[in-house]
Every structure is written in C-alpha cells, then in structure tokens.
Image 1: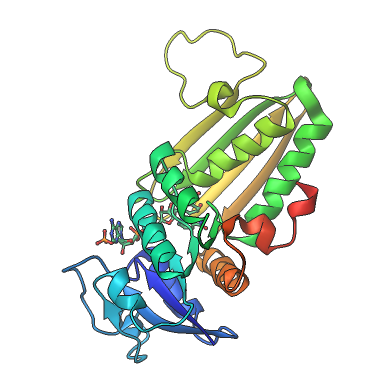
Image 2 (image 1 turned 120 degrees about the vertical axis):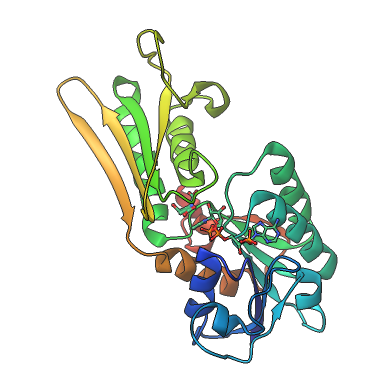
Length: 271
Ligand SMILES: NC(=O)C1=CN([C@@H]2O[C@H](COP(=O)(O)OP(=O)(O)OC[C@H]3O[C@@H](n4cnc5c(N)ncnc54)[C@H](OP(=O)(O)O)[C@@H]3O)[C@@H](O)[C@H]2O)C=CC1
Ligand SMILES: O=C(O)C1=N[C@H](C(=O)O)C[C@H](O)C1
C-alpha cells in the first residue's frame, strides 16, 4: 500500500480527492493537511463530509510525512505552497503530484529543482478528457497551419484566483509549439481600445469568470469561410481528482524527474 497525503485538504479539490481516494486500489489516504491554525476538523473524512475515516488532519506537511515510508503527496493548493511542498518532499524522499496552477518562473524553477531529487507529476489539468484535447489541438494546429487564427477561451467559477487558467495557457502553448510560434511573444491576453488589426502570429487567450462553473475551455481555429472549435466542459471536479489519484499510483517508485499527465497516460511518444 502506498501512503498518500493530501495537502489543501479542506479545499474544493482537496475534499474531492479525499472522497475519490476511498477504495483507490493500492493507495491509502494517510493524512490531510490544512494551513497552520486553520484545521476545522481532526479527521479528513469529516472535512470532506464523509464522517470519520480515522485519517488525521495535520497543520503542516512536515508533520503529515513523519513516520511514513515512501509516501506520495497530492497537492492542489497554490503555486507558492506547491513550491514549498516540493522542497519538503525532496528533502523527505516523497513522490509528488501537483495540480496547482498560476506558477511564476520562480515557483516553477523551485519545483523543477525538487524534481531533480524526486519524481514529480505537474499538470494544469489532470482529467483524461483535457489531455485528449491537448493532443487534438496539437494535431489540428499541425493540419491547419498558419491559415487559421487561433484563439483560446476559458471560463471558471468566481472563486478562481489565477487567470488565465493553467489549462488555457497550456492549450495556447500546445498550439504555439505546433505552429512554431513563441508563447513568450505570441500570446495576447487582452484586447481593449485601438489595438489594430489582428496579427497572423498572435494566439489570443481570453478569460471569463462567474458562478459555479467548474471549468470550460475552447480552442477556436478561425479560417476564411469556416471555423473549427475544440471544446472541453467539466461538470464535476471528480475527473481532475481521478486523474490525480491515477498519477499518484503511477509516480510512486519512479526515478526523479518532472513528468506530466502525458507520461501518466502513456501519450508521451506522440508529443
Ligand atoms: N490540475 C488540475 O486538474 C486542477 C487544478 N486546479 C488548481 O488547484 C488549485 C486549488 O484549487 P481549488 O481546490 O479550487 O482551490 P481552493 O481554494 O478550494 O483550495 C485550496 C486549498 O489549499 C490551501 N492553501 C492555499 N494556499 C496555501 C498555503 N500557502 N499553505 C497551505 N495551504 C494553502 C487552501 O487553504 P485556505 O482555504 O486556508 O487558503 C485550501 O484548503 C488551484 O491552483 C487550481 O487552479 C483545480 C482543479 C483541477
Ligand atoms: O481552478 C480551477 O477550478 C481549475 N483550475 C485548473 C486550471 O487553472 O486550468 C483546471 C480546471 O479547469 C479547474
């Protein structure tokens, strides 16, 4: 049995993970972690509305890892917390699955440094469906080439802190890579005022926020006289959590390195 620790255990994804880990083959939820001083319940099952499961809630990842042999941590918190958690996992030899988004170059570099010492799966979207969309967008961009304008639109709930979503950024990067463009120069995040005609190289990435929308992404390829739209709509967080649970089982015992869901799903060779 692999011991799994869930950080951000009281969050939207944390509580979904606690539920989805129940009965997961080969995995045992060993502890949940909440921010110091924030623990509302002693038991992770109570946090997730499942009643007592006999799984403690700790106020630090360090305390949760004490006494566990070769655990895996699943982390959906924030980019800063994930970077700190990656450093701690590297010091303790724990495998790590990170779903947090909103990384800066600095926090991403800290995760990359940790991945030199431990296996880390980092993906802005753990659902199998969205990873299929990544592959479809890459293929569509290759087939359609420069004759089609590429635009990415995402919509999420009104509690989301980062914009655009990590998934939208990855979709734009996938299209940019397939079209030999530079994501650092060619992504356009907002248009307002007299911005001039659309350039051929730019890839627009636009954000909507409202209500309880779980997560919606569309990539538009807009040509002369036709338009292709590739969309994904999440109606529940369970698919993200199931992907993360699959990644936790996959990452245990792997060599150090930075992996993503393409590795977990065996899609790497087609990249
Ligand atoms: N890769 C994927 O498939 C998916 C990724 N995400 C990403 O996962 C992240 C979390 O999303 P969601 O669950 O909706 O967010 P929530 O705000 O509901 O949950 C985040 C949890 O992490 C805790 N947390 C945040 N910062 C820290 C910190 N510095 N130290 C300790 N704990 C911290 C929060 O505690 P507190 O409430 O006390 O702040 C909370 O319990 C986001 O970055 C989101 O974009 C979301 C869904 C799918
Ligand atoms: O914050 C969320 O909710 C989500 N975040 C991820 C992202 O930023 O791409 C994935 C998912 O769409 C939900």
